[in-house]
Amino acid sequence: MESYTSQRAKIARAAAFAIALIVVLLLLSPASTNRLLAAPLRQCPVTCQFDLGCGCWINCQSSCPPGGTAVPGGTAVPPPGSTQVPPGTTAVPLPTIPPPTYAPPGGFYGTFCMANYACRQGYSIDTYYQAPDGTRYITNITCVASCTPPTPRPQPTPVPTPYPCNQAPVPGGDGITQPCASQWPGYDLSVSVKIPAVNAARNPWPRSLVGLATNICFISAPNSVEQFSANKAIPCGVDRSEHSDSTYDCGGTTGKQGEGAQVNYQLGVAWRRYTGSDPGFGTQPPFISALALEERSWNGGNQLVLLQPGQCTQHTYETSSYGLNGTFPPWNPQCQDRNCNYTERTLSVQYTCETCKACTCVGCVPAYSSIIQTWWWPEWTFKYDQYVCTRKEPGDCFYSVVPVGQACNHGPDAGKPNQRQRDRCVVWAWKSVTEPWTQYDVRKQGLPLPYIGSGKTNMAGMDPGGQVRTPFQYPPSIPVIEIQPVHP
Image 1 (cartoon, rainbow, N blue to C red):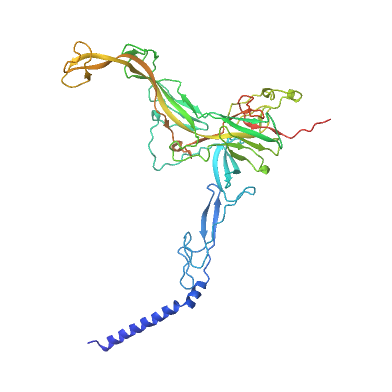
Image 2: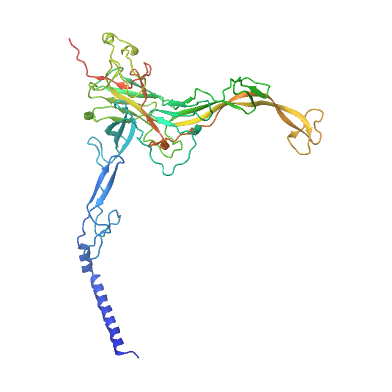
């Protein structure tokens, strides 16, 4: 039987539960609900910084503390970074990317490092804005001494990749060197190779005029260049004719060599041009190739025009090249009063280098730089001469209960049981062997990409019909003059 005190406690709990239920029903009534939704939410301003390096908004911050802020009625403001939108509110979009004043909106920014003849140091970091239609506008150029970082990037989990002669390559500028002085004692197979120049042509030639369209064509580009070491390890003066002896006397320290011997080892390195397909690096350069035009800042600044071999483009200069770097041979004054052919229209000058990035030229005139930017990756391999059998004949038959070789088909024992024969070599010759090429990944040497950018360009003059009329040679620049008045 319950006590009086216990009964009073149960009654009190029941009354409290009833009162709580009434309060909840009142809160859920339409009027109360409308009051809750109408309660003003606290705004959390979002501030961001635009990074031209990635073309994105970074360091976005909100003034609201982490975890959100409670508002009347129990609704919480989502914490910064949340995609949840509170009921009755509208999501505030991030700011749009501001385009240059002369470009349409809706694009993005990007950067890349490239060879730049307009820079005294030879290279530049270019920032560009790409419009929705694909047109790229150069917004900033910073001249730098090299596209190679000053210190190698740390590799927390390096993937071991064997190098020839157990020595890492040395990339630098437009070349790469593979040391190899220890693989064969006494023989240095170190070798270097440079990225080759591509060929462009333009008209008018040799000078262009302000306000006149200049036609520029990307004529051709090699897909690769290879170089093998001048020295050979295990040298042998091979005779590539056929030989009836299974040994060959190389003479010197190499001496006699038998079938399968490998001599005359050479180390090779090469550059392969990127033409649009990833060779296996898992990444690609920003474009296949492009024409980089120097231009005055008040005329839109430097421009990057996507261009591949066989394609042409036009550019109209609004300002002469006066005051720019003197890189182009001067006009031949004898051609002022007579119709000279294309090769006679310039005077001969002496450059301090050939197809390089910072040439000086005594007597040259100011000109706009106009280089073709391409991308390359390096590879390596070995090649050697190997003494191999080139012709076999049936050998003598022999008795064997084990089925070795083939059944005897010649001589007095031909066709007899357990008579077997083996073919024997009767002619040998030296065969040149080049092992499969292996890619370098120069990111392991601290470079940002597995590709190397090059602006090495040779320029030629062409007629209005597109026919090339002069040799392809340095420099890839365009002198532009004002239209000269004709005096009576």
